[in-house]
Amino acid sequence: MAIDQSVEARTYAKVDRHIIPFLFLCYILAYLDRVNVGFAKLQMSKDLSLSDAAFATGAGIFFIGYFFFEVPSNILLKKYGARMWIARIMVTWGIVSSAMMFVTDEWTFYIGRFILGLAEAGFFPGVIFYLTLWYPSDKRSTRTAWFVSAIALAGVIGNPISGAIMDLFSGAFGLAGWQWLFLTEGIPSIIVGIWVIWYLDSSIEEAKWLSVEEKAMLARNLVTEDKHKTEHSVLDAFKSGKVYVLCAIYFTLMIGLYGIAFWLPTIIKAFGVQGYLSVGLLSAIPWGFATVGMLIISRHSDQTGERRWHYALNVTAGAIGLALSGVFASNPVVSIAFLSIGTLGVVGSMPLFWPIPSAFLAGTAAAAGIGIVNSVGNLGGYVGPNVTIWVKAISADPSAAMYCIAIILVIGAAITLLFIPKELRVKRAAPSGGSGRPLGTPAE
Image (cartoon, rainbow, N blue to C red; front, side, top):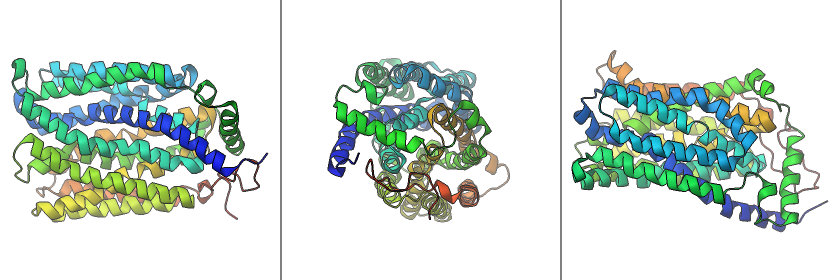
């Protein structure tokens, strides 16, 4: 049965309006609670006598806890539904993030970050899986970009807010600025997590804001796509070689992302910038550039259905940007310009990457596979902050860490082109009932 494309477009626009802005808000809070430690470092390192090595270990240990609970969390989300499970994740991480204000030394810092990783595990891959329950592959990169752009926007608005909190509240009621930072940025996650219970629907069938006809059309598009996917069970996900290739690629990308996210405020402050708010405002520039660029690139990827070359070229451009930011480190204006290109290359590649697993994984395999890729790949979040420390041991060049991260990103781009098969190219879907080639099938 053919469906009017204008009706289909209006229905997807309706879905967009209902779920994307809300998920966007949730991820801004998640990302702020994950990386605000980069800003807190500017003050807490002195207060708690934390060395750069101790900070890097604590920043990265988050991803160890994250790793252990990621796949089980995503499978439980599939079993119990996104609404209750995402609410549980947000409330838990909000409580733990706020409790970081009670950190007193190196070891309590490590413990707090590890528990925060356990609490947040499953949120990002859970949302990526959740999008597969609403959108077919050819519509998913742009929606993923809208969601992932929360990372960039969190940098745009979060860095100045974090700086302002630390400037304005330092010493209030006997608390340091970094303590106020953890408290004030943790509480909103608890509030929004409770809101999830009333707002979010776990499936198309639950959505009371859709008509019967709209639900049927959305479900039919997903069923048509899933017929052409080859892997459906949890075991399929663990046995898939493509899943482990994706783990390796995402590992390199996360080294770049968290190498930037955790150290950017420190890099900016090293230019001689005074005041936490000023550091926050300048730190927002690369994230703002990445926000605009990622939406343009992901839209073009959806329009063409091509993922591999979009990803590889964007990551490579980002690697070049990071390397040149190190070359011109003595010139703050030029360095920030190249840091902006580097940030776009990393953050802007995430929405190009995530439609790839769901091109061949369906059902429980999708939940497990996305969880595997995200958990293993996010171990790069442990490596990224530590690259600076490790490289210092073998090179006196302060920009050597940027060069190292750039090389790792290029390796990830090469793996993408060498090992991701061309048949995973996403074809634009024909209208329901049309005669177009199914998604995920090889090009003629």
